[in-house]
Length: 368
Image: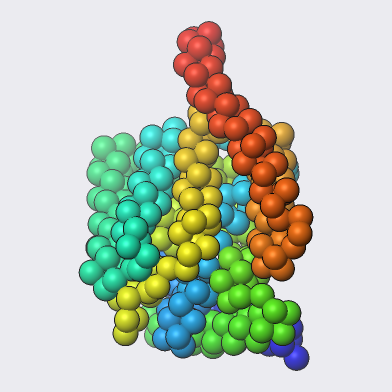
């Protein structure tokens, strides 16, 4: 029954997110916003809405570890698993704007979170700063899109050929073309998110107690993967259709909003500061930061994520998940496993990333 409730919660989250994105996108286009702006703002927030709903619901229910684990685990899952699978489908070409702007912003937001929780808690003022950052980021995207459109309308029109455009292309036709129907879709989507989040959190906590693992581990793994299903669907479908920029941009944008919007809102509504578990402070938070930083040299090499790099990403996610399972069970192999990871895998990874970064200017010069 717990698994059925968990599956029902995931379905409700995915359906709720889809209804919310559809209604909000059509309503935005009805008010004159371009599909490009809708994709950068509403659709991006829509794919992060399950994480927001689950984390806020978990905080209000007193399950802080689920809320924190959901965000940190989702960001790790998004990069290592989703980009890994997408790159295996097709090598992911990356637009220069992602390298120059979005990935550094993702790294900056991860660093900001690490600094804010050095005291092992996320207070309301810290959370308000994250929310203000989210508002500033979305506002900057709106300003940047409008400035680019005014500067080069032809290029902006060409850039609108995206899933956001496909979602909003028929905004003024069909049964949901009226604002009342669009408002109804938004309300139904929000209801689905709230209902699904409650089911998912309750089922996850029950499952954690049944198998003897902590709420944090469940949040970092099962809940994180469940709430990332919209990102999985968007990136895999985009990669399958050859829209490779979108597959990467969806993950990076979602990770930014998970930190500043999801944790920010959860911290603001929480009646007390969010306590950060020692396991998160000692390990998971730094894995999330390392994964964000690792994106930059990977994307710099030829401005694409190759299939072998996607396979490496998946391998790292499997290693991370294995560590969580061993740590949760206090397995005898944990010490040896950690030693191998710290003594061999981590140094090799660092050396490889540094070498890739150093080689990039040489390759670019040679290409010229």
